[in-house]
Structures are given as C-alpha cells and as structure tokens.
Image (cartoon, rainbow, N blue to C red):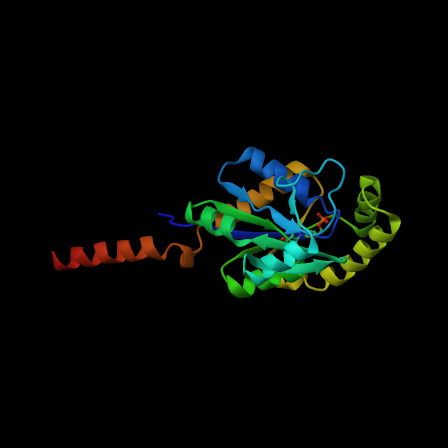
Length: 209
Ligand code: 5GP
C-alpha cells in the first residue's frame, strides 16, 4: 500500500523539450501533479501568470526566500527560479507524484533535502538538435540563446548526479519512458516498508499458531 507520492525532478538543457513531455505526461495520466515555479524572468508570449510560472518581481521573490516559502531556488541566466513549498507538500500528502521541472542547482538542493527524490535528466539526441530547437522556438534573442548554450555546457558536467538519462528523440516514446521510470520507482523496497512490515508481522503470527 502506498501512502505517499514520489517527488520527481526533471531537468534537461534548455530546448530539450521537457515542457512538451511534461504536458503530455499530465494529459495521459492522472496521478501526476506538476509544480508551478516562481520566477523573476519576464513572461514569454502566450505565457500566463499562474499557469507556466508565477511571475514575480525581484523583491517579491526575495521575500519568498526570506519566508522559507521555497523548497529550492537558483539563479539561471540572470533570473531567479524557485519551487513554492506549499503545493508540493500538499500534493505529496494526497499521494500524487509531484514533478519539478527545474535546473541542476535546484535539483541538487532537492536531492540533499529530500534524498529519496527521483532525478531524471532529459536530453536531445545531439547538441546540434538542441541549438536548432532553441533558435526555432523564436522566443529568445541570440544573446540569451548563447547564454543558455553556455549554461548547457555546465549542466552537462552534472549529469552523473541524476538517476536516469532519457533521450528525447521521439516524443511518444520519451513520455512512456518517463512514466514507466516513475512507476517502477514506487516498487523500490525502501518505499514499501510499511507493507513489508505488515507481511512480516502476519508471517510471525503463523509461527505462534
Ligand atoms: P525557462 O526560462 O526556459 O522557462 O527555464 C529556464 C530553466 O529554469 C529551465 O532549465 C527550467 O527547468 C528551470 N526552472 C524552472 N523553474 C525552476 C525552479 O523552480 N527552480 C529551479 N532551480 N529551476 C527552475
């Protein structure tokens, strides 16, 4: 019997297609809750406050840090990004698997604070595809794209900290891989100790009888 959801971190280079994969995962399965981050970055065209992000001023964001309202936060290409605590705690308690789509510094903070988090890293099949996707998206200036590519070099150095590496070649396959990895994680012995102990007690009762 599962009593609690799993915390799942999904990272990947900017332009790896994480957003699309997460959207599809949530559309197909109903046991996932996607955390909405707070950020100081400006909304892109089509983004809505409270849907893609909670858009904050630097002052508002710093207040959230001071009030310990974020379970992690990081600076990424000159903006703050962070995960609000309340939603994550509430959804985990409801038994949902909570997904944080965050970059590597935040992922490492989460692993430290919550060691049984599942860490997934999503990558495009090769670097050229990454660059093409970033340019093709058309939402950033060339200068920002260059910064994001530079950041990808740093992030690539940290992949060993993750549990699984998933190549986003074909969307459908990638979504199913992510789903099955999370489902398998539920079967880890350390997550089933309550049931295991129940069975142990029952077995011992047989001995007495
Ligand atoms: P973008 O500006 O493209 O939406 O996101 C930039 C990077 O910030 C992505 O790698 C994204 O995963 C990451 N990110 C989004 N939200 C958070 C968050 O709450 N915390 C951290 N540490 N990174 C985040």
